[in-house]
Length: 421
Image 1: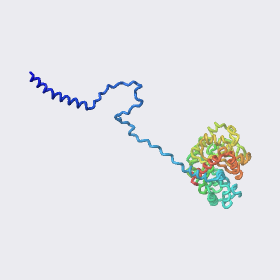
Image 2: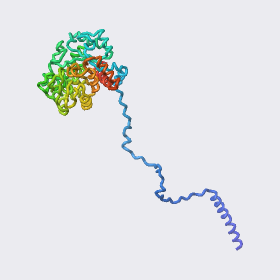
Image 3: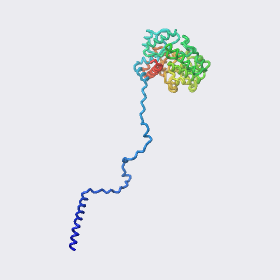
Image 4: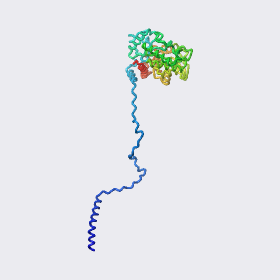
């Protein structure tokens, strides 16, 4: 028995040694962390920012859309830039003179001149006006008037608007003096429609251009709605407002396509008056609403067709203003510009007409007209008095120089549009 016990001891000792070696090895190794059971956090324990998560990208139809590319900026208006440069180079005196269209007689002080030479040169240097208007005494022959106009342009630093009243019929200077065309009074073409009105404008334009003219004070937008009215009569395109509107618009397109500056006249409408504004005060006895429904219609059509100018009549509308339209801010700025949307040149009818010259002095007329919104003064009673009055009005602050610049800008734009500059 003792022998068996010793054998057992001998056998167990190696086993104990091996177990001891394994225990020592486990003591040197790092202890493995046992994960704790996660707990559900209370709302106040939740993180304030949600950590980014990895997700599979789902296809989006917008991924195939073209990227947004910013729209290119509108290019600067080269005409506006050119106009601004010209205006910046001008003196106030020069700018005010651009706002005048005068007869060669009043410019030079020579009675019924038919040529342009040294006297005209000196006169244009003193008063560099925006334009010249001719009447029958200034016109002798085709060769003479063509040379006269060519020389006028050569003598003017800024090209001139060289104008005439060439309506056809009884108001047609080149027809009456030179037989330059055979266009009759507009009313005689009423039933021939828009094509005839357009073609007549082209015929008139060709006659004008061939003699050195670039501006026509036509078409008449008045409607002969009063049979006793003689100042307009058959000069009108129609006795009906809507018919006149179509024909006036066609005529404007004809002038435009021929590069002749044109002027619809005589705003707010001279066809219903009893009086002739050449000789006395003329009244339009209608309400503003009646004018909108009748007289304004052909003017609106002409404006929408692209008329370069609107000529004001020396007409008093008692329901609107006590002053003639030429001097009325209500009719020119509030109605013609703001309501009817006209952005072109507003020009007066001749200020030599008795409805103006017989009642107001030249200085008052000049300042009041420009203050009302007029751009061009046609045939002022005195050039010196008109220019001096406007210079004084700007210097005193009654009229701003920026207001003068607006008018000069419109005038230059017309000159550029018909190829003068």
